[in-house]
Image (cartoon, rainbow, N blue to C red):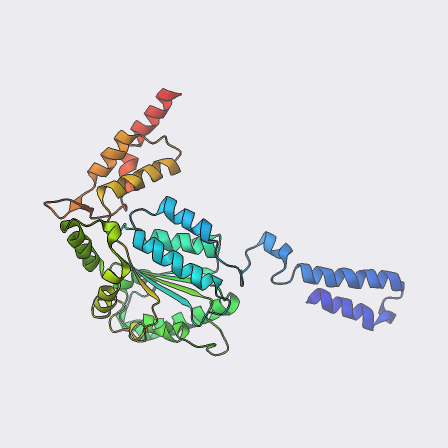
Length: 344
């Protein structure tokens, strides 16, 4: 804008620039206008040097599917639901409301992982992006006697960031530890309004992560196993109603009696199934590959065997999912490095 004003000065006040002939003035004006366009808020040149909000971009379905297939294990339901939800939302030029996903399951099953993958597809910098916002209940909303303040701060934060970037992503982790009532502050932004106080939230994405409902999901998975059914036969309709009611009535959940659920503003309750021994081995292989190690099946087996499983008698599901795979693999790192050196 300053450059444009400077150009206007040259045009309106020729007496101030007696040394310039008309051709020079035209060149300077043209250069000033071009510079202003090149460095305006969403210009391609500016966006080469700093992150810009992708207001009208669509999510690459093929890339998202490949990321989920290669990095998220044992979660056929979560993959299918999220792919369909994100594809439909991304391809809709005028959605009626923001996309609202609520991910549920025990620790280590992949909830954080999936939210990070999704954030990276919307904004390539992922959690490092200034358009992706992560809230931790125990860090950002720790005191139950400050719920009113938290609600006000949360509304202001979301309003300001969506004003700057309509496709902002908001991730709320530890929803099971959030004080009831806090999250209801964002209810107006999730509803079917074209605008709220002059701001449209319909292109934003909101993701809740919670351990609440994990017991219900684990029981359903165990019942399928006990009846001889394949876990891949579990469908969303088998779990989603249980989750929505269970979370709504769970006093230890940030969604306890929440108007967000009461108003049916959650698009999908996404269940994350407990991981079996074979899934833990997939996690170990992926971690070894990510570290640049050759996959050694003996070490894969050893790491998977060191995990603890439930129920106590059958030992089917990992009680920490893949959460401690990295730490377990660290213990075996000396053996891995020694084996790699012996092959050189």
